Length: 386
Image 1 (tube, one colour):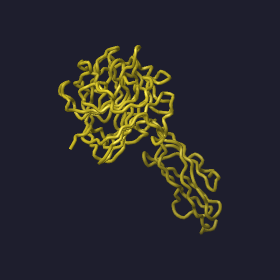
Image 2 (tube, one colour):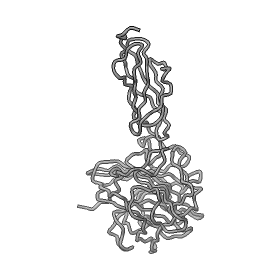
Image 3 (cartoon, one colour):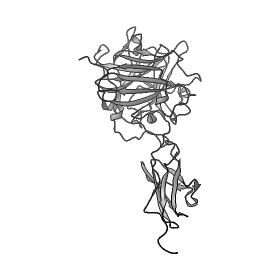
Image 4 (cartoon, one colour):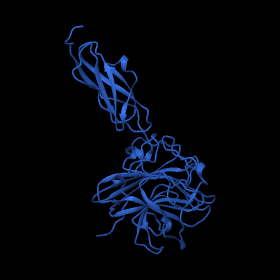
């Protein structure tokens, strides 16, 4: 059976997300490329997750034959690195990125082992994203992210494979399947390319690259890549994305390494991977939310406890028959993620069937505001006298 390339299966990771603040959903793989500018890649950023061990140089070459070197940390293009305004991600202060030495035409190529290997023989969907900036004064640099099924023992070792996504000197969004011991641009035409564009976004900032992998236990797997400018709006769902480049092929095997590959002022930063689109896109999602639930049978004129469960922190305003409940205009959540609760003490003024719902205002930027489903509540006459 023909051996096929494999990508990393982010949806299998079970790490505790520690890399982000509460302002957005955390990814299960994260690497911020933090290190001392001008030095070779080393231990990885202190807040990275989803990796084991250190970064190491990948034995590789470029055409014409020239040995590769380890990627380095650089702060040269920090002012050019920017997320789209609709994404909640921000570039860390005192940032460094994966880069080349300035104006050097060697391939700068380093990889780090992921905590869990990837089995591409299952049905699933996962995503990763990164910032991509590649420009020089006379042409375009290259900045790619690669997924490797092992590290070549020498630059002549072609037994390991990679799949690279990003932008090479083609000037277009690119998917390249090749051996791991060579630069992505050694073999052209590339496996798949989109429409040629500029190496920096129209505002002069970096591109925000989002890749989606749809895996299949049998048949073709699909790779899709989208470049967002810093002025673009990242959509709430990937279903509305018009992908810049796509490629389908059967993919199997196990890939254990994530790599960055740059040449001549190519820059990669802020790598994220996760099974969910929201975690790598930095957009807010709607929380889970229940309809109001009344404890016991509500009686006219007697206070009843009404509860709503919600998957985010915030506060609620309750309504009955379209009118606000005076005692429940700003009720805070209690508890912890993912099971927050809100309680309203409601004294029904009249008997009969009433429609109750609540509006939720989130205080966690990871989540949007929401409205509960409507609950039809039957109020009965009180059984005691005043």
